[in-house]
Structures are given as C-alpha cells and as structure tokens.
Image 1: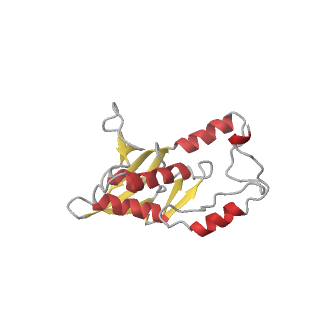
Image 2 (image 1 turned 90 degrees about the vertical axis):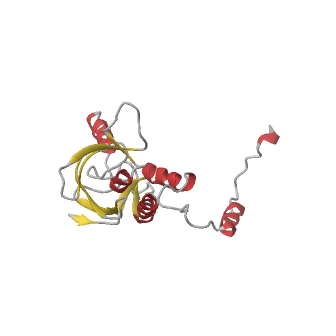
Image 3 (image 1 turned 60 degrees about the vertical axis):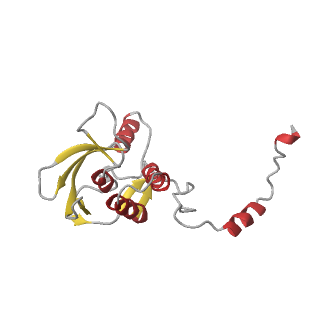
Length: 187
C-alpha cells in the first residue's frame, strides 16, 4: 500500500473537476484542498487508456477508512434519488479523494474535526471504462490501449489554472493561411 498525491483521471473526470473548481462557490477548506491536489497532480488519460483498477466516475469501489472494514460505494458526480447509501458523490471529500486512485493506493484527508483519515482503495469492483472495453472486445471491435503511430496521444495545450498567452494565440490565428471559407456573408 502506498500513500499518494498522484492520481489518474479520464479526460471527462478531469474536466468535471475543473468545472467544479471554476463554477461552484468554495464549500470548505478540506474539500478545496483535496480538489486542488487532484487537479494539480492528475495524469490525464483517454477513457480507453485508463487502467481497469483505477477509480473513475460511476465506478463501484470497495475502500477502507483507516483500518476499518471495507465499504462498497459507487463514486458518482452527484447524489441521485433512490440510491441512498449506495453512492459516494465527489461533492463529498471521501468521494473526491477516492477518484483517480488505483487498487492498493491510499490517501490521507482531514476530517471535520481536523484528525487525519486514511482512505485505501481495496478493489475496483466495476469500472465503466473497463466494462466498455470488454463489451467492444466481445463484439469483435479492437479497443486496445495501444495507439497507432499516426494517432496523436493526449497533449494538454492549455491548463485552465494558468493564464492564457494572448500574443501566442494572435500569432497562431494570423498564421492560419490557406483557410478560404468566406463566411456566411458570401452565401
């Protein structure tokens, strides 16, 4: 078991965390500290490349709090009606902390009273991305994580927490020579 600050997120999960950070008012210091840690330490992957043993949104995960018995919950974007006690939304510090961790990884977060709490991923019982790959495999569609050399991998061009370089964008727009769409006024 290792205590980690790093995590692996799908592009979708990473984007959702950025939206939470940018559009929602600050809840509490613990939540925002965990959110900042997740965003700043994330290794972002395409959904076809995320390992099956990593907690993603909608994953069913068995985890332990400190040395307690394993609890199983579905890590969800938000609470849904009718699934009381089954979901662990990412609006909860525990749900947010578990997102992106792999089996065997642990993370320490403070509780409401300030004591540290260690969460350990015991098992990823179900992961939607792995289930999708398995369905495609059974259907005869190759969905391997390996990309052809001609395909580009994920490359972060701009991070939302860094200021944009206006001059660089203007230069890039000015160098777009050859684009001959006259626009709607030519119609």
